Length: 232
Ligand code: HEM
Image 1 (tube, rainbow, N blue to C red):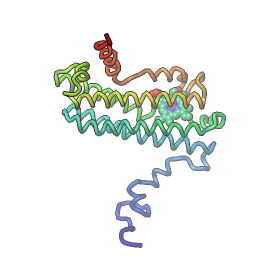
Image 2: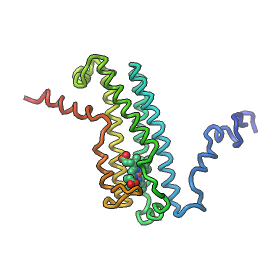
Image 3: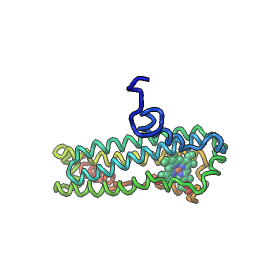
Image 4: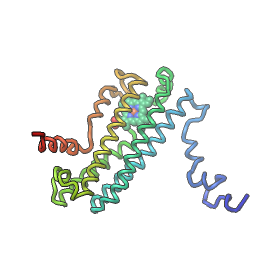
C-alpha cells in the first residue's frame, strides 16, 4: 500500500474516507435486512435521515445568516441563505422517492413507526426557531437603514443588499411552502387525505399548514406595490 493510501486520521476504519465521514456509524443507522418488516423501510429511513441532515445544514445557515444581518454584513448572509434555499430543493426532490412505495405495502411500514410524526422533526423545529430570528433581524436591518419595507422595493436599486435579502427571505418561505405542498401530495398518495396521522393529526388539518408563512409582510408588500402603481 502506498504511503498516501494509508489512513492517518484517528479511528479504526480502514481508510481516511471512512474515518472522516464516519461511514461505519452512518451506515449502521438504518435497520438491517433482518430487522425489516418490509424492505421499503430502507427507502423510508434513507429519505427521512438524509432530509434531517439537509435540514440541519439549512437551519445552521439560516441561524448564522440572521447573526450576520444583525452585524450589517448582508453579502455574507446572502451566501448562506442561498445554500439554505438549495437544501430545500434537495429535501423536496427527495420526496419523489417515497412515491415508489406501494400504499398497501406502506401500511406494513407504518405499523412500526409508533407515534413517530414529522411534527417532531428536529430539523423543522429548529427551522421554525431560526426563521423567526431571521425575520426579526431583517426588519431591524431595514429600520436601521431608515427604510420601510415598501421602500426596500421602490428604492431597491439604491439598496441592492437589502433588496436581495428580502428576496432570499421570500425564497426561503416559498421553498418551505413548495416542500409542504409536495409533502401533502405524497401523504395523500400514500395514506390518503381523509385519515389521521401517527400522532392523531388529520391529514387535512396538516395540509392547512401550506398557508403558513415565515414572512407574511413580504407577501403583503406585493399587494401594496401593485396598488401604488395601478395602470391608468
Ligand atoms: C410516506 C411518507 C410520509 C408520510 C405518510 C407522512 C405523513 C405525515 C402526516 C400524517 C403528518 C401529520 C402529523 C401526524 O403524523 O399526525 C406529517 C407531518 C409532517 N411530516 Fe411527514 N410524512 C411522510 C414523509 C415525510 C418526510 C420525508 C419528512 C421530512 C423530514 C416529513 C416531515 C414532516 C413534517 C415536518 C411534518 C409537520 C408538518 C409541517 O410542518 O408541514 N414527512 N407527515
